[in-house]
Amino acid sequence: MIDMKYSREVLAAKENSRPIVALESTIITHGMPHPRNVETAERVEQDVRDAGAVPATIAVIDGRLHIGLEADELTALGALKGVAKLSRADLAAAMATGRTGATTVAATMIAAHHAGIAVFATGGIGGVHRGAEQSFDISADLQELAQTPVTVVAAGAKAILDIEKTLEVLETLGVPVIAHGQDNFPAFWSAQSVHAAPLRMDDAASIARAHAVRGALGLPGGQLVANPIPAADEIPAANLAPIITAAQTEADRLGIRGKAVTPFLLQRIFESTRGASLDANIALVRNNAHLAARIANELAALH
Ligand code: PSU
Ligand code: MN
Image (cartoon, rainbow, N blue to C red; front, side):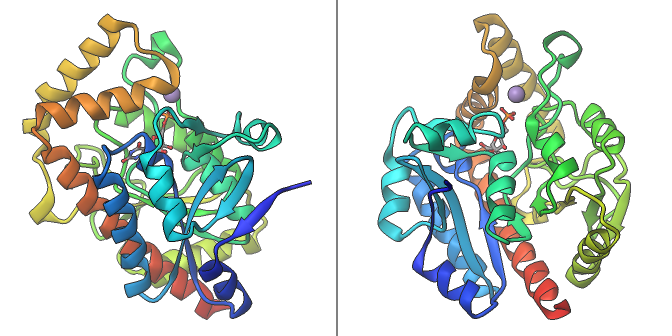
């Protein structure tokens, strides 16, 4: 029924019970321009290996759910134009109809859990968009965190979102939001936001234990680990604020809706910062991959 394929590297890791870190593919196809998307995806996979775990980049290719991509598959996916963006609602439909699509945080969590992978690194999660009281645009990523037991390492929520409302929804859904090494919730391109994080942990072992305790308690859902971008790589929030507001105003004016909103805003901010937002994005994903690999190692040590 389920057409699923492991990369050779992930299959070997599963056979030897080695720690594995899932990676999403929407960041490759919709989050970064070609060819830096492919370079970054390769770099992040290597970061996971350097930190002692095995990377599993997840995507649907011709209807087949890939848990880990071979190098040529990654290169080909990154060069495709107009690839579908698959979330919870469309993952199964794409597989059933033989399509190719990149997985969002929500769909990557579903696939990772299905493949027995408990830790996942990305850039930023989707959340409650600004103006959601009008548009109702709330990412399916939040619901997924409430029901699928995967620990997701992200650099907080993108500053293009309404961070306060995003934190409120996560609280309502009972999702543990754990800031790594600081008190405040990070804001993607900036290490700090004005919002306190509900929980703080300073080491990978505590995060791994918390994941295991939730499982033992039979609590559904995962954890969001909010890992701040390294200080040397951040863009101060004050510099970004007017750029984000301008991008949002333009999205509203052009009537950009639904799945198109996040890619549109990221592209506009990339242009307005003359690429600086992309450099920061790459740095924070690499930082998250490193922490996720350490958490995966600690989790493996618990078993
Ligand atoms: N983080 C990035 N770039 C991205 C995304 C996250 O740095 O492109 C993607 C993720 O796949 C996330 C998705 O799940 O954006 C959220 O989209 P939406 O707001 O439509 O749910
Ligand atoms: Mn949305």
